Image 1 (cartoon, rainbow, N blue to C red):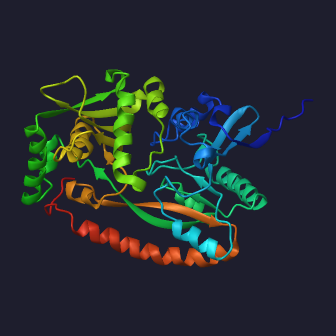
Image 2 (image 1 turned 30 degrees about the vertical axis):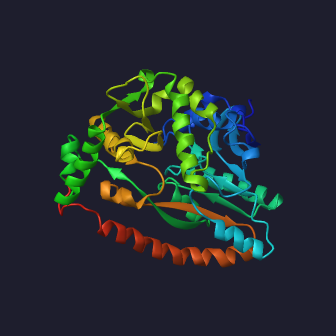
Image 3 (image 1 turned 180 degrees about the vertical axis):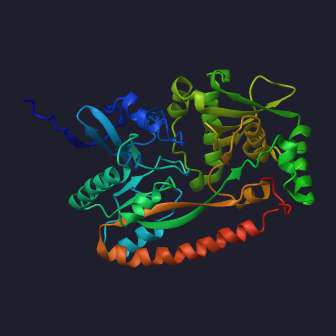
Length: 394
């Protein structure tokens, strides 16, 4: 008579994603909508020294194995500050300081420097998602209590995953992004029809200004992109960051951009602005990523001040490309109420929070619930001012 083999489960913490085989990790991540939880992207952040302890982002990933099979993973970071998150909890840190509470380090779940919706635990298909999530959260709670971590925070969460965390007692904080949706547009002119007459003229004028400057925009993706474009994109990115000071902090290293050519160019789209008189090198460029029918704007730059080039390279050219390639949603990146005038409605996103210091939680969490009501009012107010005609194509 044979003994029934019982599977062995093990929860493991690791400070480097390289400890996990790429094939095992991506078996969980490839099926997700977001490209920002795939092994290559996260590993690039670590080995390029962009997301490391010295930068205030100590990788602290939680992994769940069943025997030799990876069945779940949570990309996590111990943060020594709140920079690069785009969910601004600096007032919470200040409050904690006044109360004599150590706010940092905190445990954070998000893709570093990436304010794009989609964060969640990676769980193998066929597993009991609620059970696995609860198991991993129990381990996270134990880790935070044992190590005197003030709180655990998940940012830009997958909306389908959020109810599981709320059921486990996490508090939701409402924010908004600006997201373009493809209303079955057939071309760019079709997209322009959703605007009122005044804004249609403005958009045409902005694109015409770029044309009058003698520039043309060219989209390049995958193997079309020369290797030299990746370090050049870093130069544009760094220049833009320098221009905006603290708000444009250079979180990513040049090595990060260079590595993308080797292992991630299949997800990259560059929109490069060339001068018709000198086409050797772009005068400006935007950097986007795509996966299936989702497009994400990340960074942009230009060494010259060219009227409206930012709008064309970061919004109009990507939208035109998105329509041609069946993209359904385009997230152009953080910030900027000016996006609403170009067809990007305010769209809710959420972060989730748990505090292990009871005093801190008792003060902050009721405040969050009140703030959520005001945030929803702001979203409604922004969208009431969209320069659309009454009828938007279905």
